[in-house]
Length: 432
Image (cartoon, rainbow, N blue to C red):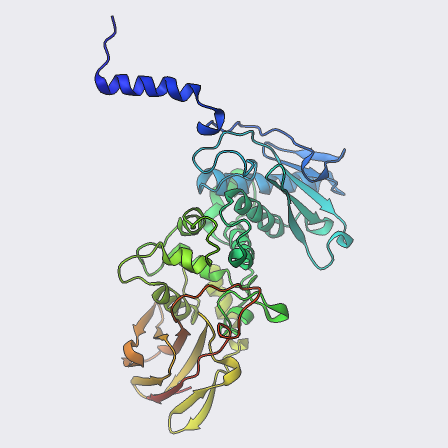
């Protein structure tokens, strides 16, 4: 006769109850091969497929096979290794940790340029099914960065929490670009790519002319022709790599921002990030240090740092007007807006550089001092401070506009949020 302890009996009864629950309450194991679903996105008779994807209407079977190969590597990297929710699952069936299927192959459609003028790719959705699909212009179907960008959108959609939240809308693009950059230009997916026989030597597409040259803009700005939201992904790289070892940041931070988002709150992603921080690590501290590290692109991304070294002579730093005697005033057109910054290269004239900053705004100021092997950061508490500079070191002054968080829509930024922070500085031991 089998006797059960009280605890064992409880779990035995729970197991019987769980077996009787509807499928949406129990997690199932994903199959090795997902099921084809040609209804999503329109289907077609010409396609190639793999375990998790189906590619329609390519002009070349070899291109389709290549596309499937790097998509499978992306699936292995992001879904299997990093834990993103697969876009093979509908947002209408079990959430994260409660996935029950069915699991469907993600459909990718090669389309002519006229289908979406001016764009290389697009994520579509079947709202009734709760599933995404991808449209990619023919000439970009074999481009890993483009297709993985769209795959990033599909994963983000599958995570669901930011769907139909207007204030998160513009952040979908930096997230997709960040995912594409992780895949192409960092070691993150090297194991998966190597296993698939793919090259691991891709280049970053970081746009320093925009990120640094227009660093004064709102940190994520989706407004018109001057928008920066596609280029603003290095902030996500910084909070993921966490070179400052700030509590709350790290490899899972982006998924945490999405999964721990206050459902239907329409909060901004900065609010979501702020909710994950603790102690003396505030969102203002994080943003301020991000911009300080962008002075030399010291964000834990080797290829981005190399791009800075190659391009820095052509970057725009004309932020200040010179008033003489070491006094400078920020140009009104380049005054830092909400969570934006000014990055100011200094020419040292003495071994000690000092600064006093005067402003009615709330800001985070830092000296970034680069030597031959490392960069150090000196916080300027209260807007004043000094730093000793050794021979061969170079200094940049970084002033970030870091007020209390506000709820803003990057596609419709109010004049208050888009207003630059005026300030003046007094320098000794250096000129700007």
